[in-house]
Image (cartoon, rainbow, N blue to C red; front, side):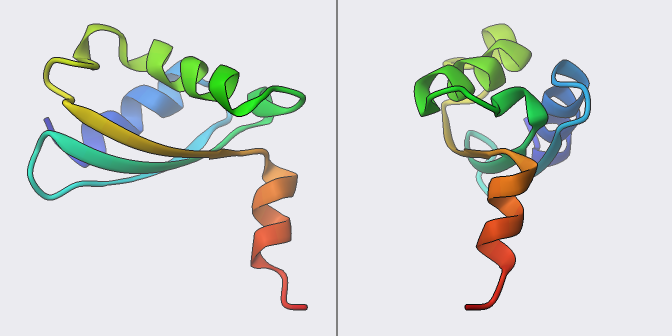
Length: 82
């Protein structure tokens, strides 16, 4: 498994989402996912949306996936200078 494959699966499964995925060992990955679909959802529900895009790969080819899930507005707020 590689980061680009995971990125593509997430972005295909969540239309309009933008994912940044990293992971050097092929089984442990970190992802930041920005999607309108997260609006109004709690973190657990957001994570479930992402896991659903990966299906059976979770717990198999993908041993661990650390997620940060934000809406476009939340992503923009994090990039502003005080």
